[in-house]
Image (cartoon, rainbow over all chains, first blue to last red; front, side, top):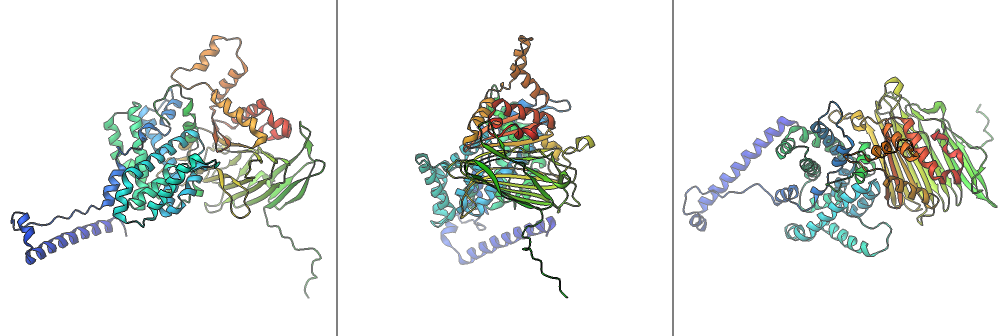
Amino acid sequence: MDASDADALRERVLELETQLQTSKALLRRIEGSKPESQATGGRPFAVQISLPLSSATHNLMLLSDSALPLGSFAYSSGLESFLAHHKPIPSGHSSLSLFHKFLALSIQSVAYTNVPYALAAFRDPLDLMDLDNDLDASTPCNVARRASIAQGRALLGVWEKAFAAPARTQRGEDSEAAAAIEVFARDLKLGVLSSEPFPVNGHLAPLWGVVCLALGLNLEESGYLFLLNHAKAVLSAAVRASVMGPYMAQTILAGHGLQDLIRHSLEKVWFLQPEDAGQVVPPMDLWVGRHEMLYSRIFNS
Amino acid sequence: MSLPKSPFAPSSSLPGTGELVLCLLPPGKQVLQTFTYQYPLKLIAPDPHHSGDDKHVTIAFLLTYGGGLVGGDQISLKIELQDATRLVLLTQGSTKIFKSPNRSVVSRQVLDVRVGSLAALCYLPDPTQPFAESVYEQRQTFYVEPNGSSSLLVLDWVSEGRRARGESWTLWNWNGRNEVREIDERSKGRLLLRDAVSLHQDDPGATELPGKTDNMGVFGTLIVYGPVFKELAEFLVQEFSSQPRIGAKNWAVNETSAQNEGTTHAELARQREQQDGLLWTAANVRGFVLVKFGATELDGAKRWLRELLKKEGTIEKTFGHQAFLCLR
């Protein structure tokens, strides 16, 4: 199986779908379903259109929307600090080439430190609590920790307020993922009151995996979207930090370079267990950690 | 005719394994209850000395034949610090990781340390030095009492290789993981802290290793935990937060030029850090203080760390000047 096979299969699917729709239309005509022919004004070739877009695709679009209220725009994931640490701009670099370097490093770093937790939570939502604790123990600096927790809790809030009810009617009461999130949310609220030394935190990556599962996305989409959203957040930070304009940012987002990088990074960590996750870009921890020391800042991380 | 049976019990030790159990005998004498090792691991423990507060401190040197690990060497050391003991764990020179015949031959070091109640471990080794085309994995796990009465100071650092031979991060794989867990007889114990770094050269599509390290020649982590190191931990966080701010204007340099003659010690240290390309952060994470640092050259990092730890003084007082042997 390779790319040419995929193309052939895609063609075949299209062909079959067309056949299906034509057969359906013919069947309807033979059966002479009267109310429908009245509704369509008696046009002879009225074909009932069925869009091959599931509610999972709808949810995928919602989760990839930059208007999803996670507050990701408030975090630059170390970009602001990175730029401050490379002032004056070293010879042979421009601020754009520096940014490209940072974006590549940032995606790889997030892929190796966070994505394994998102994938593991998707594969087994009952592990959510342990994954949350382990990711908290593995996040070495306060700045990154704050950013991850703030966005994770925001995602939990969006789930409770907006996604939970439709997901329940759609997928029935027996969704393991939805139940896991519910228990997690309850423990998070109780954790504020208890004196437990290591309460539930609400990091983004594991919650992301479980929310994607509950909304019917598949594992590949969840992982890819996690990295794509990260790239989008870094790019939007770059626009606001005046590294580039919005069209340039969109050009990078649409480019093959970014797609390949995300795909490649995801493939690398596909089977990486959370306990083997680790930092692959050591200076990243230093830049993110030293964000607190910037004299002036426009982002929270 | 068969050989006569050996009168000695068969050896139960495996190559590269070692065990060290430190206990306290009344009225305050530290004894090594168990002290075994097998080639290629070697341990040396001189007689315990007295610290500044008049308690016994035992030093153990963790050595390997040839000063490093040849491709495929496996070392596994178990250490137990029983209640109220103090151990300094050191090395003699950097641990060299030699070239591997291929990527699947992994040199490995496993260290399991159990730190009892009121016991304190001070582990300040030399850095590991991975040569070109080396493959290395390091797993260090520290088990502490759930009530927070154990103390721990762990340094883990890695350098770029043999710079004199033009090696700068030309290794194949370097994989280090430090974990601190609660002592729990029934399970692995709750994970309190994990610090994992993974450097690898096998990504054709990804950024090359020298690009990922951003011209730095050494990276390290210092983990500080427990009542013995409480003041040190506070000092480190304080020292970090009092660093000059990073901004468009360089505040630190401006100040020194204003009072040319009376440059203070702190300002000199800061200038030096700048020359050494030293970057560091300190953070309070789940009851630990975690310091991460990087510098252009090993000497710069060594000098900075030694001066920082000496300035505070806890280590010298509790473990003696010998604890700084690897930072000289």
